[in-house]
Length: 285
Length: 280
Image 1: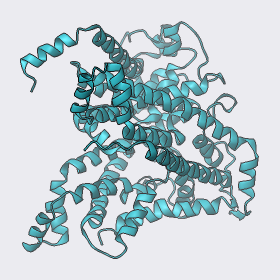
Image 2: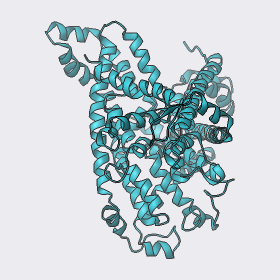
Image 3: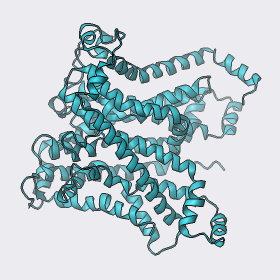
Image 4: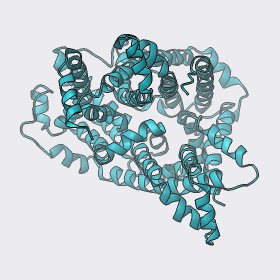
């Protein structure tokens, strides 16, 4: 709600030399940010013949879908997209449900050892993934679960310390009177959790849901290590494999990166307000 | 019990692996034959051979290139955006786009951009520079991609920090005749201390573990090991180069973990002394 008066003042301010310089820097920043996306997408729309004979900066002429057709045909890219989508769905649902349960226990239930256990959760936040992948690989191999769907989801589906931490903070902000009132009306812990607490916490749950989708669509190191062969390849692993197999067949490789990137750009376009405001709120790992 | 699934997950997939990796570090294991206990042999090997020191040095150089640049650029963009010029909201969103994309996919895109023939950068400059295969250029190139993908994220935090500065402070400074330059250095920057702390800590910790885009750009540790950061070395020793030396990888993983804990504690100490402003 800016009044016409302030809007006029902002517009005249926008024409001052200092502001013009600021605009120049902002525009250069935006061009540098977006150019790689645009260039890679345009390359994916070119015929290999055009790519070989003209400047890589030339506009696609003719515009072709043959790279995408080859990618999903001979490139075998349908399976990675399906696998990754399944992993993301299972991980998001599991992580939200189990993290919500744990966060509620930490926020509102009394039991011996609660604070000690919460410290354990916080401490595991510091453990980097690079440190755990080697032992996790040996553990999954030992029980014969390497290169399976379970291997892709199990380490993440039972909840994340980060989600538990954020949800607990939020749950603590819910007035205790509200929970007491529900209890007096005869609601059990389970009912209170899903009918009272979760509806109140919808913003943070939505934020965590989006963060989890983004993180697990993008994840690379663990699927790279625990999968072999094409069966359980995720999109990121398949993209890396394609790149090393078809080195310098850039029109096909850029079609693969487009498939890896585009779904998240759509998610981002739809939820951008939500994502941008939640990043500085949550740290977004 | 509500806690059971999450607790089982944390114990099995975060706490237990720490114990397992400590045990692996004491064995010789190539994934084919069963592991044999070798005591501190791996530790002695890793700490005396030059490979680990080299990877640590490369990692520190990488962090030293990425962190100051992305923090400085993020601060600059945030200050420019905080002027409230029309269109600022649009730019703010645009800058975050690389942050949400898969670092692996972005690495592959940049591998094409850096390609000596048919790459966008050389076409733009009219050159045929071997960006990723020259020992002098590979690490800066890899660092540049890191910076490119993270500046927008840093900007958001500085924007939030700038927005939290009480307007009355800035008005008081203006009444006292402080110019924009003075206001920035004497008021805004000191008050951004906690934000800077957060951005530096999370940035250093993330950069020490950087792997995905570095692997995409230089899968084998780069020319003469120029981009052989510690995370890449752990992966290559354990799974990559056909050596399958899990013991070595475990030692290096634990060393990295120790470094990260020390970095966190040091930064906490350093900033605890400098950053307290009571505005009430």
